[in-house]
Length: 258
Ligand SMILES: C[S@@+](CC[C@H](N)C(=O)[O-])C[C@H]1O[C@@H](n2cnc3c(N)ncnc32)[C@H](O)[C@@H]1O
Image 1 (tube, rainbow, N blue to C red):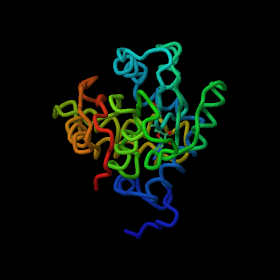
Image 2 (image 1 turned 90 degrees about the vertical axis):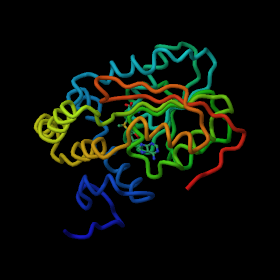
Image 3 (image 1 turned 120 degrees about the vertical axis):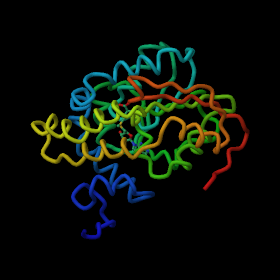
Image 4 (image 1 turned 180 degrees about the horizontal axis):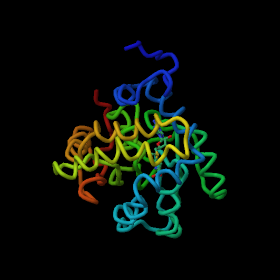
C-alpha cells in the first residue's frame, strides 16, 4: 500500500479505513475537507442512509432534557444546524450557539436558518472562556474528533460546574445478528444508495468504518469518568445503532488527561 500523503490528508490520499485511525491535525484536516465537500447534500443523504431515523433519535435523546428559557447552550459540531433547530423548537427561549470545524457546514446552517448563532471552531480548542455554558451537546460527531480526551476536557471546561454534557452518536450494535445486518447495510447497501447523488463515495465509506471501529456507550462512560465527569444516564436506541450519554461537570478545574 502507498504511504498516505499526510501533508494533505483527504479522501483521495487516505483510505476511509486509515482515516478512522488519524489523530490531531491530520484528522481535523481530513474531516474538515470531507464535510466541506458534502455540506450541500449532507441532510438529504443522511435521511436516505438512516431511513429517516435521525429525527426519531433527536426526539428520543433530546426531548426530555428539562432545558429552561435563558439557558446558555453550545451545540458542538452543529453541522447544518439540524440538532440546534430541534432544540430551539423544543425549548423556546433557550440561548443556543452552534460551533463547527467546517465552514461549508456552517454556511449551510446559515442558509437554512439565517437567525442561527454559529461560529467556526475546533472542539479541541473551543474559543470560549471556562464555565460559559449551562449545557453542551454534540450529536453524531464524536467519532470525527481529532483527540477524544482533549475534546471531552474542552467540552467540560466550557460548562459551568453542575452543567450537563450530552453526547448522542451512532454505535455499532452489540447483538451478533443485528451487527451483521448493520455491517451489510453500511458497507454494501449504503454505497449503492448514495452513488446516484455523489461521485466520491469515500465520505460514506468513512462513515461506515468510523461507526464499525468506534467506541461503545460503555467506552464513553469510562472516558467521561476518566475526565472527571459524573455520568448520569446512558441510553441506546434502535437496537443499539444510536445511543446517548449524559454527564455532569463536577469539579471547578478540569485537568487535561493524556
Ligand atoms: C455528522 S455531522 C453532525 C452534525 C450535527 N451535529 C447533526 O446532528 O446533524 C458531524 C459534524 O461535526 C463537525 N466536526 C467534526 N470534527 C469537529 C471538530 N474537531 N470540532 C468541531 N466540529 C467538528 C463536522 O464538521 C460536522 O459538521
